[in-house]
Image 1: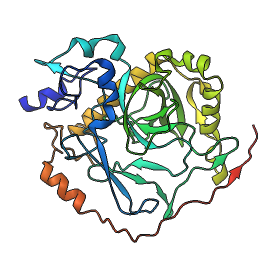
Image 2 (image 1 turned 90 degrees about the vertical axis):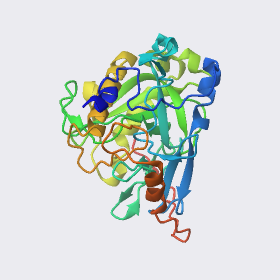
Image 3 (image 1 turned 60 degrees about the vertical axis):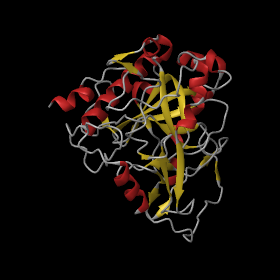
Image 4 (image 1 turned 180 degrees about the horizontal axis):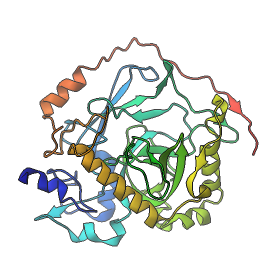
Length: 340
């Protein structure tokens, strides 16, 4: 029981697990620390891109395979000294900063996702009816209109009803729409500032969509809450709402619905949603709830019953086929004009 305490005592602003979150070595400045975020992780592709068997695995700075779902810390710079968050970690400036795993670059159509049901949770193509999934181009938009991804160490529990939406979770890490100016790459791990959240209701499930901006974006210092998006990027939130409302219509499905009549909620509201999904993830990793087919294999959350060694993680990756001869299948571009 004592071995569980480090994880169970994890407070808001601290990462779960016994290992300290990846931190730039030395006493670097805040700016330098933020700049180095992506250098802490790298990816390794196996298989042919744009094919069903393609997988993008993650490695940490030491070159060890990790799970982007479970091993990358949720919070930015969640460093502890004798079990107490440092002054820098407690600073209000850092309360809304989180790590984000980029799954889908802006302006692309291929639906890529963290493979929550596979060991070490690589990024993989989404498959439906044996075919790769691509989101349609709905005029005037081309593919995804943001860099799209998820926050690690979060989980929307499908058996837990959200009090504010009266719907259960969608069984995935919480989604993020990153609105900065740079087009990122699948597998990038960036640090983002949370600005607000939208509550999509997808087939009766709550599917939160966080709105965030890359901390390294030239305009990031101007953004502090959801109203700043309306001020500095007029029309972006309206386009976001319309995109989520219509993106399944070309496939013959009805328009999506939203909680709160499609209102984007504030940063404070969003932080509470993240806190709740992080608590659900901790229960999942400690086997305190039924995760169903979710694969919880991890390398760095040492108190978790799903923890594995570096050697075991390497063997898991090497067991995945990396055939370069698999047929690539890129979608032909079609535009849909749906009106209002």
